[in-house]
Length: 333
Image (cartoon, rainbow, N blue to C red; front, side):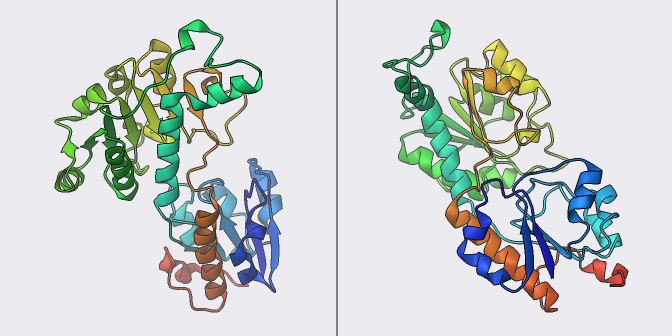
């Protein structure tokens, strides 16, 4: 069968141990993204199956309707809003879901917090240019880093990733404050952490605030300009979940106003992030190119399941189909 693997920016997939699961199949790995409908159709029309790397490519109705050979979308991890599931079902295209792990994104979150608080990146970058113990040549930003011990770590959502991050905070001597659903707050309290008295209190008390919410209609833009205005001028805002959780433009405006005092970000509304992005020009922003799951063990996990699902599907044995109703609309081969 003809298989397309999309958006492998680092050309890493073919080096994975699990790639051998696709031996004997006609596999094309694409290392560069394309966005235009016509270009996408031309690229994908020949393929029986598409393997997606998380949400790097969106598959909408307009695109799917022009791919008559497509029988399967094999998703690494869980499907989010990047696939029009209803359209795929109506067009007879199956969607197979995989599995994920909270470890890599939780560890990256903590790495960003540590790096931002101690200003490691600008210190290291300036050292290479011969400047000793200097964060910035712009004096208002040439500030000292701070330790985490004794400060408040505020976590919005206490799911698998939030729980790991809370544990890291505790190990570093931070006071952990949690906000989320009633069940989420109760679970945090049961684990020995403090539930915020209110959403407002979460933002007001945070020295470091990190988001670990899923993106859905109910959470899109859930962090508002008013929330960010409540943060301390010394606080750090961290987002390794989804950029769309924050109201459009609110974070950039808040950072210009000085509340919060800085941000550490791994996710952006437009990815890859354009080189002229305002965020990249802000000295108090630490930005990484969506690395949360981009790590060897995670890739092996994601792609092992995605490739097994694909092989099982074409053998008539796949048990992880998200939209079983696709069978009612299967197109003639």
